[in-house]
Image 1: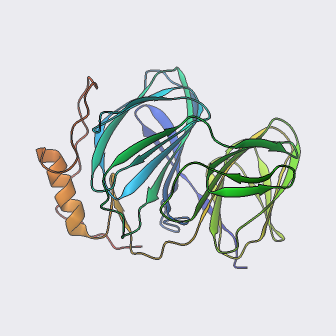
Image 2: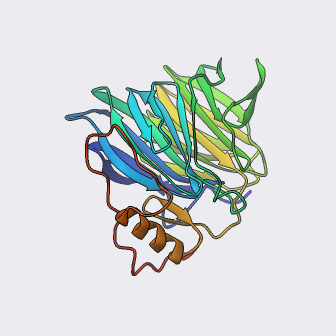
Length: 300
């Protein structure tokens, strides 16, 4: 198996909420079709988080809430409160827009994007809410299966109800005290592990790293066994997927295949022309796309 890669996340702020952005980076653009990963919080907000209406194309937004409550509104007319242990999946496809507002003084979540493969990236937009996901406890860890399937040594096969257009895996693993867990990996997947809280030792087929919040461990295809060991309370997000061998471009809130697409989408959004629709019920201004006239992106 090739060497593991340890990647530093970038610190930022979205709507007043501090974030660690682990994907994309210059060194690693994707893990499978996962093309964006923000770990937001945990944070006590000084003011409510408000992210005004903004557009998306060519992707799915995947919101996994750990603490707090968030109100989602979109141009399809959905209004959905997201609560801890739940997932919102919004398929942008050919174009959609949405807004997000915190309803609680404290928040922690993972905000992810999934790049849609070329064959379906212009599909009709959609929104789905998943209030219940497979959960089980094993070797001191509590596991929530966000996407894909996983086999438990004690409880057998688990399958997430969240649909995907490419083979993917997502698992949230949390422990309240010292714990040690071994999980099989799918050899054809590349994987990424990001500690959200605490500190964990990660071993992949004999290779070892200690992880803390703010770093993503990339595991290339070929890994077969994952060993997690914690000396105290901790939480880690495990992502995986078959490599997406397409020249994907990501700019602002769009996923596409050419600079010209990005320019057209940005101009269409800013002038109110295009496929994005309108969010109703949000009482603030919508976001404006940056100037895209000089874009020179290269697919990766």
